Image (cartoon, rainbow, N blue to C red; front, side, top):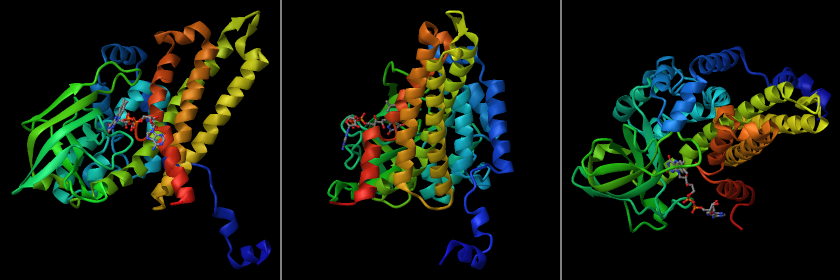
Length: 400
Ligand SMILES: Cc1cc2nc3c(=O)[nH]c(=O)nc-3n(C[C@H](O)[C@H](O)[C@H](O)COP(=O)(O)OP(=O)(O)OC[C@H]3O[C@@H](n4cnc5c(N)ncnc54)[C@H](O)[C@@H]3O)c2cc1C
């Protein structure tokens, strides 16, 4: 059918099929998040949390009170019933204002989405309402010392005994590990399962459960305001009612969660890239050398043009992944592209921002070095860059 005939037969199709603008509500959310971050993300407070490696509890609580935590959760669990797209706008705005504060606050509800998607009513009421209200912090324990990229087999076991599970094992690199109120843990519930991932389950463990202990993993390169913990489970007994969803479906639940959480990480990366760019742009318009502003050198102009082009490209793919998710078209290939590309752009743009600042860029005070250090984790957690490429390739090629 020729295009003119198609448009006559299907009026309106041509005029509304693609729209890259935010709607009024989304613009308002973006503006409110940016205003909150500008008002609350004080630079000196950020530097203090960076130096002391402490979670910004006061700001997180305020964010919860104002409805920014779990904006994508249904209203009955304290959310605002928006989508992953709107959550990405908030996360981007927070990280643009301050990479460290933005990341740590946006990760305070990390993994609670698994309970939202797969948990029962009692679990949702007990765990989600405090999380969205900024009263409880969650964490997700998948990685183990011997299993990082490959979580198809877990050494952490959960054995059913009457109406309890007994959990033994160690999880490492767990965000919020030492400060969270509860953790959702991926355990091997059926050690005989073949393939092994068909014998895994997600189980909730509360912070004060006997036999559960946690310790900080030690000094790290960036995201110093987030706690990163090693969790030890030594005959930890939890009620069988703490099982999330179906037994032995945990691996699949976690993969589905990654489809969502990787978009949030990509939004963190986008905010970091934009924040580093904003600072570099302002600096090059101020700083003069050889009798000219840095921004007057063509090499600087080209750098800025390249940085912004990368950011805009990342924004397109990340927004598309988020929009797609909210339409119910979960697409692991697109999500992995968004996370992989967003992460790379964050690292490259923050790197170039330091270069444009020269020696000052190397100093903590000028912030871009912190954006750079915070950017690198975007290519590691929630699946490394290589694992995203594997996902893209396997969606592309299937089993060869
Ligand atoms: C600060 C921080 C916070 C974290 N937060 C959490 C958290 O909250 N919860 C959680 O469960 N985990 C968390 N992690 C763990 C993180 O998800 C893992 O570090 C990551 O998945 C990689 O696992 P690994 O470190 O064991 O590296 P490995 O899996 O050992 O990988 C090492 C290298 O080999 C590459 N590689 C591995 N397999 C393949 C393959 N098949 N093909 C090609 N290359 C491959 C990797 O890409 C990487 O470059 C966090 C990590 C850090 C550092």
